[in-house]
Amino acid sequence: MGLSLSTLDTVPRESRPPALPGDLTPGIVHIGLGAFHRAHQAVYTQAAGGWGIVGVAPRSRDVLDRLRAQDGLYSVVTVDGDGSRADVIGVHCGLLHGGSDPDAVVAAIADPRTRVVTLTVTEKGYRLDAAGNLTVDEGLRAELTGAAPPLSTPGALVRGLLAREAAGAGPLAVLCSDNMRGNGARLRGMVTQALGVAGRGVPAGISFPSAMVDRIVPATTSRTLDLAHTALGVPDAAPVTAEPFMQWVIEDDFPGGRPRWERAGAILTDDVAPWESMKLRVLLGVHSGLAYLGALAGVETIDRALSLPGMVDLMERLIRDDIAPTVTPPPGVTVVGYGAQALHRFANPALGHRTLQVAMDGTQKLPYRLVETIVDGRRAGLPMELAALVLAAWMRFTRGTADDGSPLPLNDPLADRLRGGSTVDELLAIEEVFPPVLREDREYVARVEHWLGALESGGAADTVKAGHG
Ligand code: CS2
Image 1 (cartoon, helix red, strand yellow):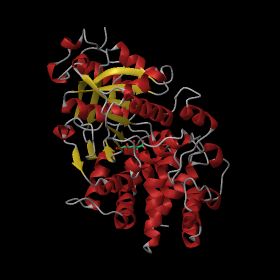
Image 2 (cartoon, protein in one colour):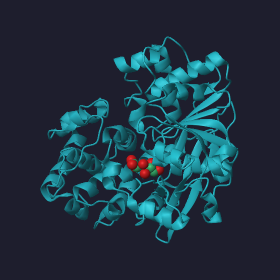
Image 3 (cartoon, protein in one colour):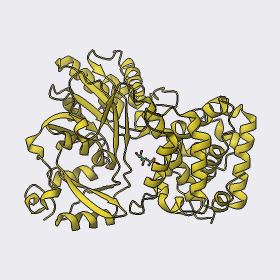
Image 4 (tube, helix red, strand yellow):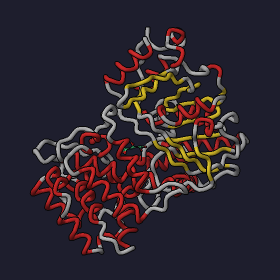
């Protein structure tokens, strides 16, 4: 017998949830049952108490079916160099499959008990380009106008908000829990454009607060399953693994109310931007740099990429010389100090965070992690030399082979436009990713070309070890 309500009393007391799914009133609809949501927002919400989450799996049923078989229970396995612990999460009081029951998702959003809708659908799930324009194809148009079931995130949100308005279900906050700069405004923009296609405007009483979310949550592996089983004494078919660190900074704009997330350490503020800028540009800019340089060097995990000779020094200089001048940190925090903490987090040998997992979807991630940093730095007259190396490493990565000739998978919504050994200029011409000002900066293009040549001739490991162009 695996983890379930009937075996929960055999689980060590310190690992049991404070309340059970059946004890909770559904106040949140969350779209996207991925590992990050289950190790981050669900943990904060359980600690806040009193609120239940109706989880929606938009496409794949795998996690949903595993959770349903366990009465909605699963564990978060927190790992670091000192060992691991498992905590059972019992906050999901409803579980829906968007792909097969879109009407139930619409009804959940329209339910007056629902006062917050949250999303973790990854950057590509919003169908927005770097400028925030919604990509509307015929399929989405049919969803938005009611001619087809709302299977996409924009479709489910629009049809749910319109049903909510018709039902007079009251105020609601729609909160993005994905990595995007200004994610509240971008989500408001997406919903506004999508409603426009349906000939409607944003209903009254709907807010789109911004938030910065942070916890490193690698994909679940067989080791996660083993650690969970050992800690709980029963098998868990849907565990997630994560680092000890977690952070959530939220714009406090919830017209219908919200859980007391601050009880679990969340920071409620009226200005998320400094926190967001720190996380997206420092933590994630370095993360992507480690991912591409590590993958090219044939290194499987982020912690091992960081242990390549010269890598720590290179990343410290990237943070100090290129990223820090473009970031205004929150009060009481320094960019260099935050960067040192980020490198310490990435060095966690127990995470096994794969470079290829971080490397995927580069065209969706690089605009806010690296490109905007480069544009700001060049506008300020800075060389942005090591940022050029990271950009060149991504370009080299898109060619599909590591330095030893082994294949590198290119998982990216724009993969078809990346393949084929494009030149620097051809890649910089992809305007969904790069603003024209970057391609017009010929001196900088030459530096990217220089680093690309160094990576091609000397390989990533030696280029990192040399540490200078
Ligand atoms: C990672 C992020 O996979 C990736 O792109 O860089 O998921 C990162 O681990 C989290 O945003 C950390 O909060």
